[in-house]
Length: 72
Image 1 (cartoon, rainbow, N blue to C red):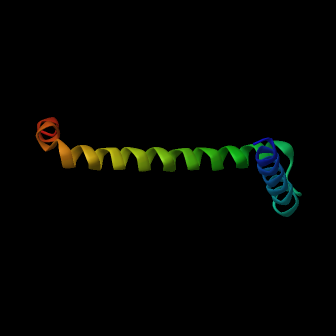
Image 2 (tube, rainbow, N blue to C red):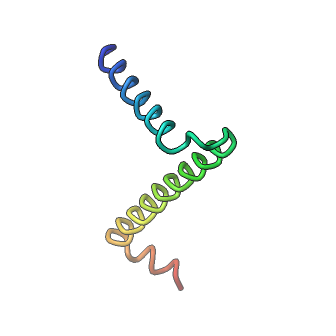
């Protein structure tokens, strides 16, 4: 288990290093933080929207009477 965690940690360290070398070598630290924050917000909104839509789809399929009364 420890070796697997070490391997995963090394993989993500390598990915971070490659990202820093290829894309953000010319960026200042505040620009990197802003760019990474935008990426994280985008992924979070995508995950939330996906969850909300799938949850809404399952609820409307199983409980249509409840939802039809909400949209009067």
